[in-house]
Length: 92
Image (cartoon, rainbow, N blue to C red; front, side):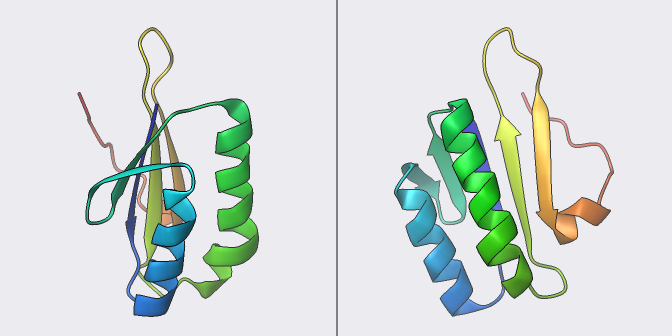
């Protein structure tokens, strides 16, 4: 499973990004989506962020992707401002 959370200041970009994520999973909070994980889905999301959305991000906009599953390595992917924040994030 993937948990994707985002903080995007521009209303239009945020709405487009939310609509994009809705194709893959379900919204569980305002800026948080739960998505069934597969390598293809994850690759599609990362590619779209890199090619379309990241260039639209403003100063502190960010996207975090948490890869969560039983028995797998926990992984956090960072885009936008979040790339600069390498402080530890703990999730259970």
